[in-house]
Image 1 (spheres, rainbow, N blue to C red):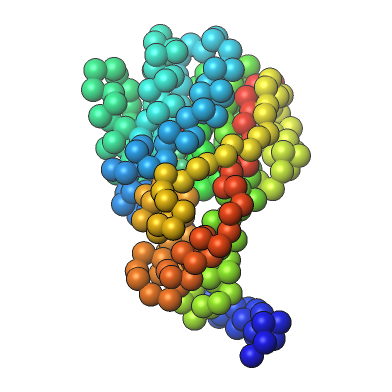
Image 2 (cartoon, helix red, strand yellow; image 1 turned 30 degrees about the vertical axis):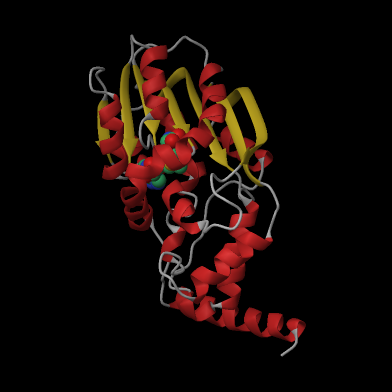
Length: 292
Ligand SMILES: C[S@@+](CC[C@H](N)C(=O)[O-])C[C@H]1O[C@@H](n2cnc3c(N)ncnc32)[C@H](O)[C@@H]1O
């Protein structure tokens, strides 16, 4: 079969597989993100967190130092931002929320002597349980894209006090291109291996996010859209997957394709990553917004 014909056939097989999975409602959901982050929690700081830190630090450094009362970190992971917030705002009570008990367990170790409250819950469920106008500052680093950004923004506006701040950084839909391109090519080449479907909620652009913020009565105090290069800490000929599966980049998505198991899909993914020398970069949107 020539290459063009093969592409058409692969595309047709993939579409049929997607329709069949959609009809049987095989979508990845919260429990898949939770399971992935529970699994990778012990490795997350060493394999990934330090790549995120420069952008997270920039966001935290721009927060006006005015918060008093309660601060909430949504999707706190292993607690990096929460820990920084505890030293920036020692007068405030910090609550760190995450879906993954494994990630929370790691976060707790950072707070051995500093008081903080840890909540094992989905971020929207947590916000729904909070009183109106009860929080001064909400922070969320690299996490709202796993939930529903518009709903999180709406709920944050309800829970924040007047003039309260919401500071967040989120991946854009086209982030980490070489990795997701290889993932999509594996889906097209091995559609029968596709076990579940995903509808990621990462925003497409700054303007789509701005619309959500304005609708919820937020005014932007500071914002930054950027690309942050990532150099994987491995030899160009070595396997990428053992590292990738510890980073969180494929969290949740690993339940769609059998990337964790040696086999043709796994081997094809590695081959595609080796052939693609494009820079891996995070495309992100960071903002600090004030509730009017
Ligand atoms: C990429 S990590 C970011 C962790 C941390 N904020 C940081 O900067 O390192 C995303 C985190 O969001 C959490 N998460 C994903 N979906 C969530 C949800 N619906 N509610 C609460 N936490 C969630 C994951 O468990 C994970 O710890």
